[in-house]
Length: 391
Image 1 (cartoon, rainbow, N blue to C red):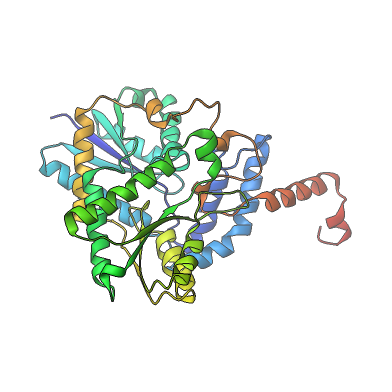
Image 2: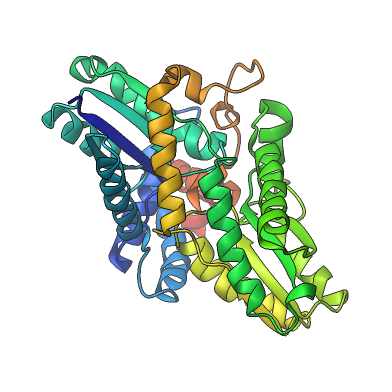
């Protein structure tokens, strides 16, 4: 029987507090996150920014137990998916490729080759395609494939996005309904979808389909809630996790929460629509930061829908995706990472101050200026920092 490898793509995250600094360094050392005109500056700047950011990031991770659960959850999802596929008659083995922390993509490729896999199905654990998530992971995989003649011999099928997949929609609806029923007045509970944001320029300039897919997905979930589960609750869609001064997709989640408070909403069900596993954005940003904003705004019952993790209906949906991909025409890495509009460069490939949203970080304008001052003063041995006695 043909050996099928299922490669799950995810972001990754620091598992221990001591991993936070190296994790951030990996983010910033990647030219897909910060693209500099002088490549030699890349690693020194990555060191500087990760050093400046580490303390604040460590505090966030300490508030959720000291590290990200994303690897553990992704490994559980992989095991459940592999079991489901094998029980369905598919000789499948699952692999994990994290973008910025262990296990890295190179490790997954090595395992795939060692296991003698006949073909690979690439499944990003991002339901909605974005330049900065699925697109970045596809392009990393493509670069590694171009350098590896042995890996090139293995056929690859890519699943680009799957926000409308029936198992995913059904699973989300079921988990939302559980929280609605726990509200004081279920029929009046307001459903607030919150998705990880992206810079507005990604959508308007590069044609990133993320916003459209998020909007369509929220409507599909609401329709499923009403048609099959009997809920007709009001809802809103918002975006979280923006960084830097650049305008991101609106409305921002914190603004929506304050607005709902002014509308005298008391029962609120918050839905992390773009996340399939618990991590820093759900456990810290939503459960701690946004909950505090909501309570201060007058919302008395703040409920957050659990991430999908290994919810059986969700795993069934992933299994269906893989089996369908094996029957459908092949989508290769070039097609998977392609944007709908003809653009010369991805936004993060334009040289500019700052970086994209896949990094959980703050904007780097100040850090860049500090780095350049340090570099110039160390080079010439004089300057304002020397005069102040700092150097």
